[in-house]
Image (cartoon, rainbow, N blue to C red; front, side, top):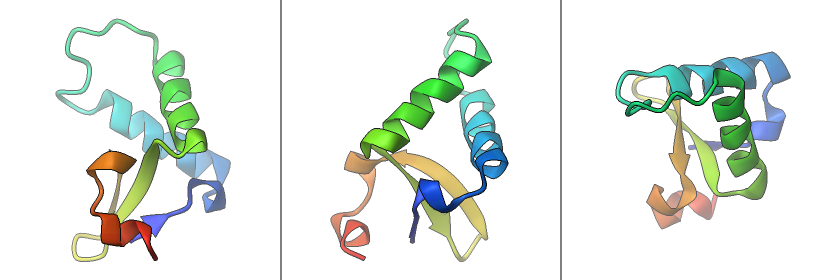
Length: 76
């Protein structure tokens, strides 16, 4: 299930993005400051390039590139 990012509380969205950009394996040696990385993800969400996916089985949200999400999820 996709969750529209603009329906989340601003603090919740920020925490979700921060969790995503600070997760093990996401920095790859990137020394870009946290606020910059958060803003990049926020812009990708605003442009529709990234989406928030909710996994009901695991009760977790994660961020994904829209192109990596199954097409049928985008139709809902």
